[in-house]
Image (cartoon, rainbow, N blue to C red):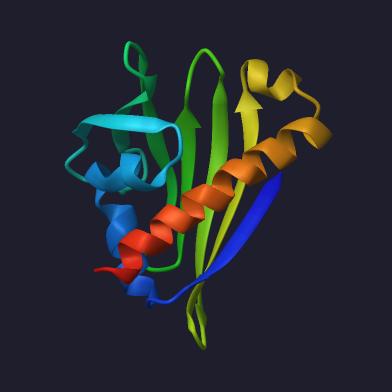
Length: 143
């Protein structure tokens, strides 16, 4: 599992406000390119974000589902990006003297992505999530 963390100069509730606004998903998640729909009860367990992955004209419509929610603290997701497969992502917010320590843990759980050996896929996921955390910080710090 790839694990990344970053200190964000914003309190947990400001970061949570970004996470619970499903329409912002493609602004902070690397690879998500546009939103098509957000379930009305997002981020309640079982609710979904309907997004596209890739760049035009090679867009793939898919979803991300909320698996576990602890407001202002934790969000567990099942992110789909077929034909690449599915990943489980855990975002944790921990109060920190400078704001909030945000931790993202992610790994492939289904599809061709799990065939890539963990020592190869973890650094690739981690590299992507460095940028994901940077984008999330930019959004939260400007709220």
